Image (cartoon, rainbow, N blue to C red; front, side):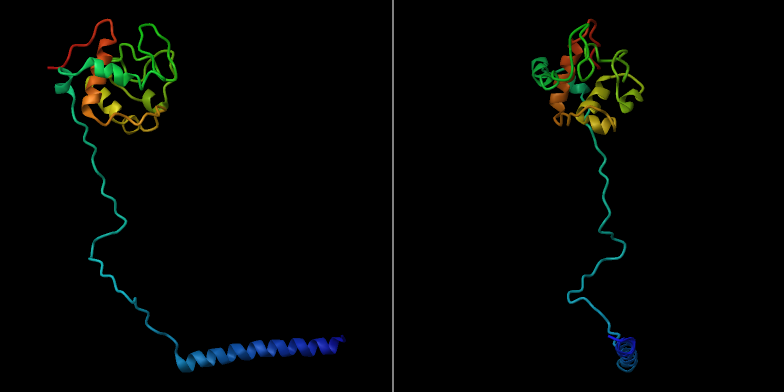
Length: 179
């Protein structure tokens, strides 16, 4: 193919493209294709409401002080069987995956000398009172966000009271029950 023939074909293609663009612009100017678009099924949304808003529910954990007096220690011991895989309960016993919980009631939070707590639990201050244990056992990850403890928690207040009453007995000098 010679150069002159190639130039003729390229010029024809370019002129065709330019003519299509020019006639398209002239056609849009004459016809004015702007149309109003409406939904086939209009949905009315009241002012001020947002579909993406979430309502934050405050978690209310029932107090257990009244239930501790009538708590069943045998039931607490049965519930503790869920904890045995990670925690020890014997005096002088060693830590497992979790710390030894002997004498845990009124012990400092996140402070067992030879156990490496998560940053969330190590940052806690205060003591493991009956109510603090109740809150923790309800949902550990809610109580201390970032805890290493992978336990969902005890949702029944009676189960938490029974377990805490049993934990109270795992001490040389059990802490007196609240009045």
